[in-house]
Image (cartoon, rainbow, N blue to C red; front, top):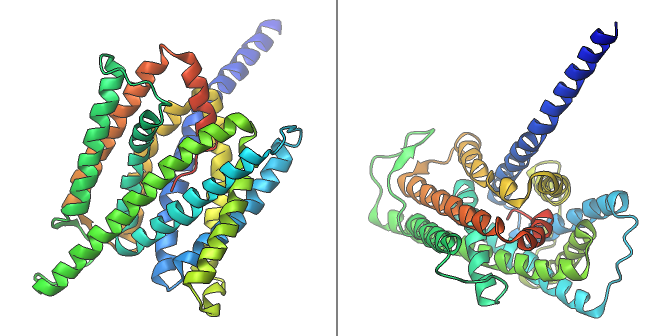
Length: 361
């Protein structure tokens, strides 16, 4: 009987161990599917005529409520004090993340596609690396292999972004038949919109990268990531509400209906700002930031598939080639980052704190 009991205990421990090993993978896949669905839901809402300015306000408002609830549940014992420098930083976080980052991202989506937005979001780690070097937050030693890998990965990623912006190419995969020829005027207009939208997305990701750098500084001053995210969302809500009041004078723009106009801000606020951030925090604490970031290309693939079937958008040759280069560049950059962290555990700890509160634009 004792031997049977021991065998049962061993099996139970083995099953529990397997679940613990697979849990981070499941959580990462879940988080990236959520991230992939985000630009698709936003695109549907924008195509139905919802104002991008109002959408940003509602998204941040729901995000404030969702993260405030999580902060009450998980950071109730937080004793950190909010000082004047923290308030100043939170103001600029709202400006960079909401007014510039999220608004320009939505404007870019109006002219491009969810697949492009998801692919170009892989530039964020590379842009963050450049800003960190400029701000002297990142050591730059060209003789080290890790630094060389990050420089090479950054250049490859930007080459991919340039290719996606300047070259659309033929439709490789499409769910509907299109006319075999287009007028030169129509094609020129589409290409101009494509370039304009891609530039909006690029600037939004530059802003988001600056947001993460400032977030790194602020989290050291106020080590409560979920509470800080809630305060940042509140700042973004107030600033984007002022922006929307100035740029959109239509009272009807603020009306929410029981369709995608309500789903989009709820998705943004509850699923992205709330649940997905908490999931990321769990993964980063157990497996580290590099493991979490390594799954980013999955959201690009899922977004392209969802855009193809939900929005019936074609996938173009330029998008495939550009996205491939960006993913290769991202992987190279992450490898270089991981190589440096092996020799610098303190830097790994700081990066982990940053990734716990990092949001997907």
